[in-house]
Image 1 (cartoon, helix red, strand yellow):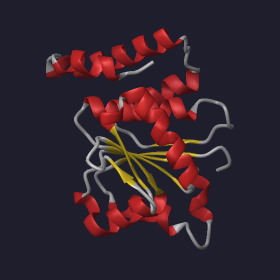
Image 2 (cartoon, rainbow, N blue to C red):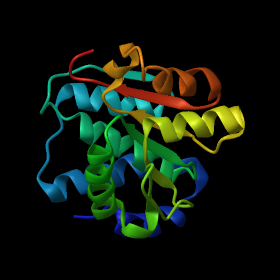
Image 3 (cartoon, rainbow, N blue to C red):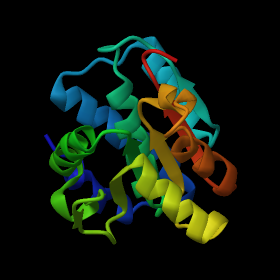
Image 4 (cartoon, rainbow, N blue to C red):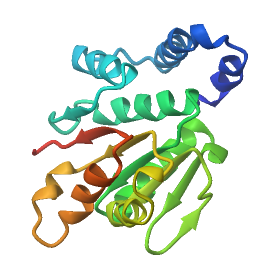
Length: 183
């Protein structure tokens, strides 16, 4: 099921009711999908919605992807661009197709070393190095309201950890969701 159908409803929502309406629409979507969020997911949704950074270190299969979907939804409904990053192109590709199915193909793009698809979309799936290079070029001027960094434990990698560190340093106006099952 897609969240895309709820976007039109939110464009007609008065600004002073947008936050509640965005949460209500997400909860309606969860109900339609038959998903009952775990308490930790609900707490994470609240953390995202108030603009705080989030470190989500929970076991594989515990619902980190649903929290990431909420973060992308929150950014999308508030007119912000969001990024999903991961260290492996295959994971970025998989998440691109998952998010395109959830949010609609027009709302999701992908940037890897091999391919760029819909780069002006409000949700971008990118390898960590792509986002790091953009952060180095544009710094705080990069249009990135929320960045979801998956497999954050790679920050400790001697050869590639810089790609996780650079966005944290350079994107000073960005909200970060850092996820790892093994952090």
